[in-house]
Image (cartoon, rainbow, N blue to C red; front, side, top):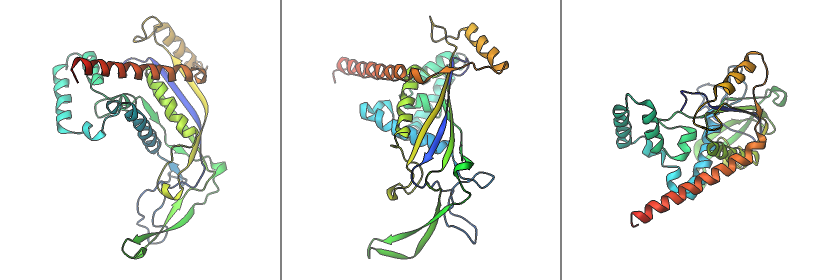
Length: 290
């Protein structure tokens, strides 16, 4: 999937905490300080790991796809099963001299969500950088809140179970940057739906969500797109397009176009792809006599 450059989408923007945010780095070993500090960068500033954002996005999209057809987003536990790993190993041995055919076989056995986000045998097309804080919106302080474990029998505070934890204050902004490479139009449509969930505050991040923590809002500033595929055969790269793109990069010129007008096209491509998959499943079921 990545042996030949075909397209690239760069997305930049800001992620704002609507309520306080808690992404813990685990229990502190410091003798003095909060029990559960938040993740920080090397300068002691708050940080949102790209994996946290990506994981929350993937989880929401999986729930959507499973609602349409459970095979579109399979149980991740199946991906690490011994039987599945052995099957992948056998495929690699069978097609060790034919990388193209191996890729086709692996894609055939890969569910839709993993084709974009990756699996143990398919690399992810979507990467999110760690989200760093916009210093003008953070005043160098964290909030500390108290927590307590409840005894289920007495319904009162359990002895010795009082603790405190750090949160990043509301209205703190983080830089957002993500990159997608060699994605199909339907995969880009799937990504647009997921990002829209963050734009409309529907995907929380971090812990303490039952307390109202973790509500965030994504504001996408730019979507830069370059497509070097051949118009007659989208599976191949157009050398002239790629050379023009590389020339502009070397000359510090923008080799990208604005991708925002393409969102509707990509979303429709996703709908068409899902409908095709559903019809294909129905046809196979009829032929199998189910």
